[in-house]
Amino acid sequence: MSQCVTLSLFRFARLRDRAWAFAQMGLARAPLARMPGLQFWKLCGSGVGEGFTPIPNTAIWAILGVWDDESTARRATETAPVFARFHARAQEAWTLRLAVTSARGRWSGRAPFAPSDGPATGPVTGPATGPKTGPVAALTRATLRPRTMLRFWRRTPDISKVIGADPDVIFKIGVGEVPWLHQVTFSIWPDTDAMARFARHGPHAAAIRAVRDEGWFTEELYARFRILGETGSWGGASPLSNWQEAA
Image (tube, rainbow, N blue to C red):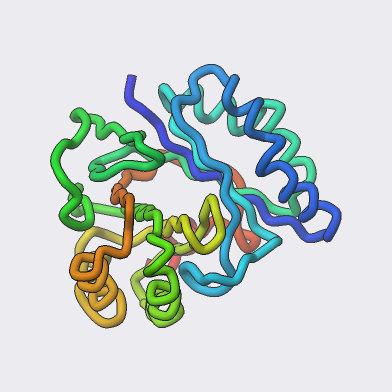
């Protein structure tokens, strides 16, 4: 059986539901830790705007999970009590099920993502590689050094504007475990060529050079995924279906 990664996004409209979701960042930890088949998980908030920004978005919250297999992932994200509570209060929810094609780096001291052909080894040298056909998803996660935090967040709005204007990007969101210090960017692209074009030019490329030259991060991880399936909607529809219709 192959590992399955899920990213579940929840949008909350009412203030009391947003407050509830904020409280779940602590209260949901125990039930997730006890959930059968769940190898690794993270509860995350989000940033406003395109990509990732330092301004929190109290309307959108996320749960990332790494499961033993896809059937376990789908059953749990649709029916397990902790997920059912999120669904009951959310105005909208969307879950992506993903297969890891490549991964480099660590998250909270662990290497949580296992590609289907076995775990990758070696140092983090840049974005992970994977199949060229798409759509493909990319996840970047980093822990910032406090002394570099200001420099990082000064560059990030420029990157967010560029990714939001990129005609190739199918979907993008920025989430994080701890505001300002831990950041995760997740995006979906038609293929790896489109993803590479964005990464190699403009503010993103300049930021990557600064990461290497100035040592901004204490921990980083890059992963790519094949999309297995989805449940729910985002913005009233499926971003993947919208892209397929437009294509």
